[in-house]
Image (cartoon, rainbow, N blue to C red; front, side, top):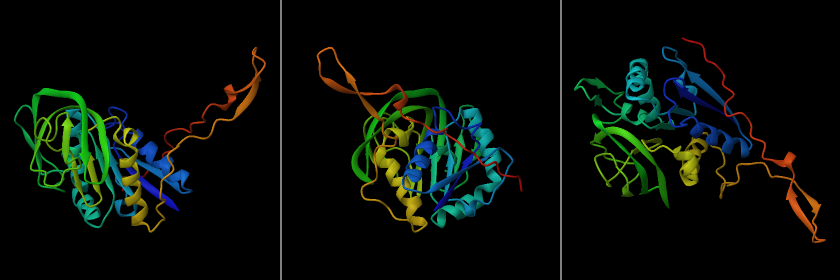
Length: 264
């Protein structure tokens, strides 16, 4: 089965290796025998979102975030409609704040989000830079990541991480973090989040597969690499030992094979 991921503004919103969330998602689906097409959208470009299987945006600076919202505003209604129809959405880092009703920057200026949820974000001059360790209602394992933000998010009714044992959440130390509603996942945790948390990766992959009626494996394959061939070598002790050949290093395919969309 072929899947299509839309990546909003990769040149603008790709801090902290956010694109790797797409890399591991694609690799997992390909390991299951599917094909994945990654379609990047530059600011001002448009593509049919209804034909996508995932909408993704990564982290960016506060300045980049404003520029991204300016370009995203004309698509806000389409994104809300797609999400209400069950479209999987994954927004990472500062892109999380764009899903809400409004963002107030450190100067006091306020601009609208896409309004997928009612929460609001207020940015200050203090940055919260720390490790995060928390839990989610989606599965029993812990969720880990790294936080680097300057915002407080208020009014999230359905967080992705329901509690934190370590780190700064939506509204302060500990508490909850991120946003989750139906097939929409958003978190300011970097790492990247899906790389550091295999169960979160499998959860997002499951909703992508389920929406298209594809089989969900139980369990998911956990080794994302090709196996390394080994060879016997003679040791001075007289025994034969197995050693990975230099030519047997894991073969990593390029992270992206983008299909550039046309403006419309």
